[in-house]
Length: 326
Image 1 (cartoon, rainbow, N blue to C red):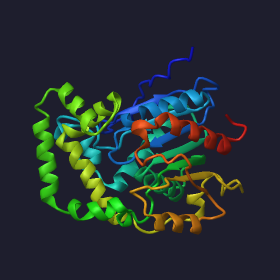
Image 2: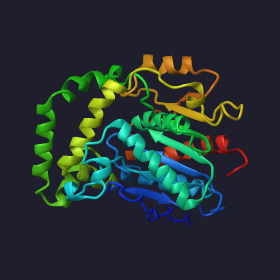
Image 3: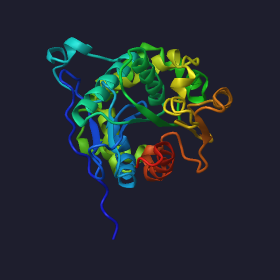
Image 4: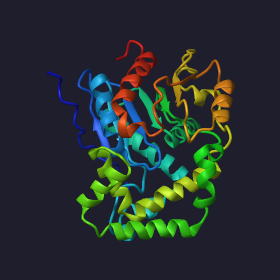
């Protein structure tokens, strides 16, 4: 009889940190020295979409401590103007570089809580852009964090506005009336019974129960909608050109003289990454970070229906990065 999947444990956030949902899976083997895997979601940045994925990954890698966190602004909060964290971070919506700064603080806080250890970064979609920016920030500030490498899933790191979805949505994201309309719709949906919204989300979006619950949070909170749209609009402008050195693209591998400290996993037909962009990235970074196109035909939003499948694939790449330290 198979063992039940690991359950997320509470994780103490840094002081004066905005409300942030987390998924935390402490290592069950060699916990004192187990590498820390920090997971950064895409947009919408609700970490609970990834619960089946991270839970299964934890079961496959019991010698890893896994911490995933929502992006700021995706956890509903009341009394924003009176909150102590607002003095430091503002009240949102938060921009890309603010998200990077918060992930930096979260990572350093986690290492302080858990003890110094090797770090792995794993990210989905625009979370890969944030990861590369995070690595750059740590290097520029000369912070002593040993990043062993990472896995970037369906990474949107260049030319997102040139992707099929980017071309479709860019004009609408720039219109204030679109944001106002969607926020008003979320405000109205907030008056409906929670279970009803979850059921409708499950049917309309064809999502399993767990994912539908997360979608209901997104659909019934205007501030969360505002954060998602604000980030998406900024992504279209900021995620354009290559701005990183090789030691960022292949952190861990470049430092250790190895190939593949970082693994970039592209989709076969990813509507958020133009085929031309994917080919350019793979050609530019050939011989450094490991670049591959996944072979199972998984969708960009793998976390909804294919979390466990992706976790099994990621387990292999993590073993390659860590080598004997597993």
